[in-house]
Image (cartoon, rainbow, N blue to C red; front, top):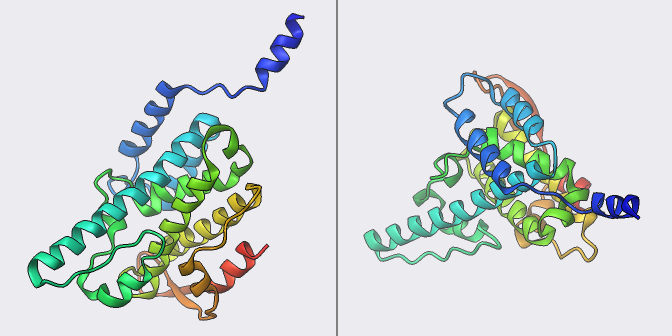
Length: 237
């Protein structure tokens, strides 16, 4: 019966926490704004590194880390605004859009200065791509429902940055937004009882405006992205 034990054992997920930590350190320190390699090439290199179940765990951890650190940063900014002005700002993770509508000019978009050092156009974009491409494996290595919530949080912040003018919409920003939308759809597709789409996504889907997409190195407009249309295409399934 040894063959049966081997067959059954092969269905179990074999994860290596030590390797996951090594991968995370490597991705964190080798890539990002300090690398001489362009962001698209960094994304390709990172996705190749994270091409198995351990890599998927690392990718999921990075997405969750970014969402947690961005929320903590916005809470700290809101506290600082209150300390300086007496103005109270409410920070809700389910939707950051009301916060930005009320006080966007007083806030800094958080994803460019995360304490963990993950860059939205390098490590984060790659992590999102890995999560989407391996969505069918999420149930074996992590909680896909919680991860979907974190993906939507990062998508909310990305769309806010683009729409409120705090982030220059270049090809790297557009690629991140597109990957987040696509990945959210891929994760939704593998959840048995998918949740209702969060308020900022539903609001964005009601729009039909196209944002100009610029060359990262110059002022040229090289395309456009309609975030509402992309969300309707990927998320209304």
